[in-house]
Length: 403
Image (cartoon, rainbow, N blue to C red; front, side, top):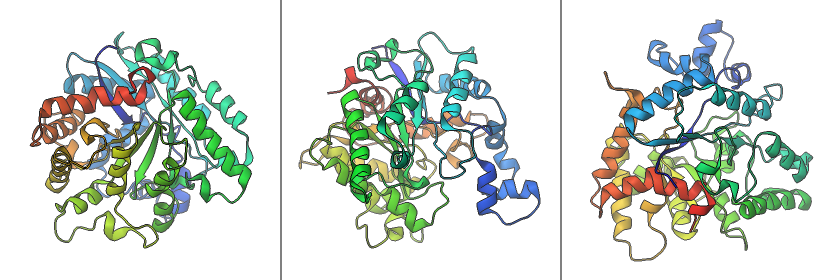
C-alpha cells in the first residue's frame, strides 16, 4: 500500500445539500433574512465567517481543489486520501435533497476536480439514519448502498489503489439527528433485529463506520435528548454483545475536547466541561468511555476532528492522555495506535486554531496538531504522528491493513 496522508473527517457539502431552510424555520425568530441566516449559523461577526460561508456557496469541485492545495502545503510530497462524510438529514427536513442525490452531487464534483494527482484518493462515507430501518428492510439499505456507489467487496476494498475516486467505502452515522444506535433501545423485536443485522453486515463486509460522539452537536433536539442519542455508553452496550466486538468504528471527536480536558485535569477554572453537562442517567465522562472502548476492542478508533488545538488546556489534556497511556500497565491496545487525524473542514474554518495571518487554515490547524503530538513525552513521538495520519487511518479504512 502506498504511503498516504489521511484526513478521515472532512466534508464537501454545500448549500445544495444542507437544509438551511429547516434550520432557520425551527431555530430562529422572524427577523430580516440575512440576520436569520447569520443567527442560524451562530454568526455575529459576518466578516470573520466569510471563508466559512463562501465554502457553502462554491461548487464541490472548487472546494476540493482549494482543499487539496492546502493539504499539499501541510503534507508536501505525500499522496492524499480523504473520506468526505455525507450527512443524512432525514429528520431535519424530509423535503431536503434525498441523501442519495447528495452522494451523486459529491461524486460528480470529485469527477470534475482536475487537480487530483494519480495517487490521490477521495473515498466518501455514506450518511445513513438508522430510523429508516423502522419502515424499510435491510434490502432497502443494500439497494441504497449500491445505487450510491457503495463498494461491498472486501477484496476490492482491500487498498486505496484498488478503488477509484468517488467510490463509497464507509458509512457515517449521526445519532444526534434523532436516533439511538443501540438496538436494545428499540421497542419492537423486528426493528432490533434489523439494527443488529445492519451491524453484522458491516462486520462481515468490514465496512468502517464513523459515528458522531460528543455532546456538542448539530440537532433539532434538546441537550438532554442529544446526549441520550449520542453518548458512547450506547456503543459500549453494542460492542459488548456477543459477535459485535469486531465492528470497525471511528468515534468522531473522541468524546469532545472539553470532556477530555476535564478528565485529565487541564480544564481552566470556570470553563464548563462534558462531565458537568452529563445527565445523571449516564454516569462517566464521554472521553473516558471512548478510551475504554479503544483499549478493549481491536477495530475501534477515535478521530481528533473539532479538537480545540488553539487551547492550551486541550493540547495538554491530549498530551497527558498519551503520556499516561504510555506507562499504563493494565493492558489493552495503545492509544497511539487508535487515534486518527481529521480536520472537520469546513466546520473548523472559523476556529481559532485555523487563524494565523499568512498561513493557510489547514496548514495552521494541522501544524497545531503535529506540534502537540511531537511535544509529548512518549517514545518516538514522530512515529506516533505518522501512525495517526497514515498507519492507523489505513488500518481503519482498508481490510487488508486490519490486524
